[in-house]
Length: 428
Image (cartoon, rainbow, N blue to C red; front, side):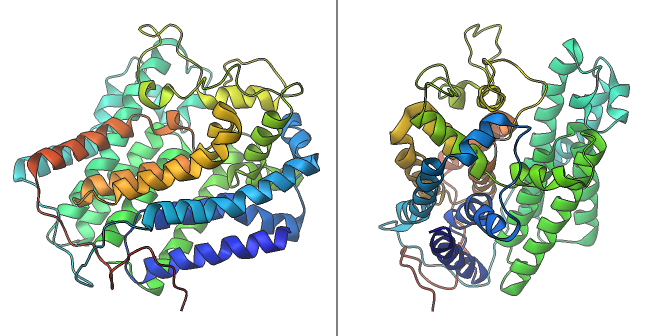
């Protein structure tokens, strides 16, 4: 059954990859491909290298060893792709666009200057903090001095970094010509922001934003799209290995495969949510139904204003992984959209997660301006692989851009595609 589910999932990934290669910019395609990479490809890893030894993570190990849980996971994965794709495309408004064309996203000169200032703002923001010298080290949140006022102020730095990513994409989309000098200056500024953030999620956001900007501008079409995508994945994987070795003291041993599977797969996490839903007397992820759903709209509300604010979902999940009562940890097991819905609403979550994600892709695809469209694409892709707290600051920025677009009634930009896309599936 594993082989059949893998082949079925690969077929859907091939459909999306083919459409993207031909220039179709429907947002569901990158969302589906990331879902494939983190939910379906782990099945291939199991066939080639075997299942990881998760004894260090007892909750994950219990779920992995449970055969009914594995069967439910296989059925769930096979259902996600058609639910996600068809919800996002079937019956959607047909778009006719000019092939291989791009009109720059027009920004007034004053806004371009403002974007340039925002792009370089993380460095002065960090220097104004209570202890700027702490940023001489990468991965500030892993340091012993990351407490109290330093930790509170770092949320401001993180917001500045995520705003800089949006500004960088805006500059790339609004430029009349993409020059090497522009690209180099943006890369330098974003590298400084990534250093200050100290999170791999920030690097992923930067790669996603740049990837979308170049894709939207028609600089990545055909096989160039696949080649650059593969190079980006290899570069990020290499960076991640170095991150693990340097900051988490994990070297290339038998544990490296275990770490790889947890970092670049969400199968173990989804299996634990499935197991907990089926066996609440043995493992419970959330204390009650819907515990973390309010965080999707209230993540940025300070706990001083909202004393009963739930913990981030990753903290509940990490507690379940270690068979511990809910508590704050100095780190967290990376989670995603799919298992959070299962944990929150039970059996209904199996359908709600892909359907709601598909509807959000469908809605986001109606956004006409390239900049808010880029932000929505990054947010929807990140939902697949991260919990919302990791990129919460990005959400109000992007939705402010969406509101601005609706209020300003901008003229729709052409969607780079070679044909009308009415949601029909073709692999020919």
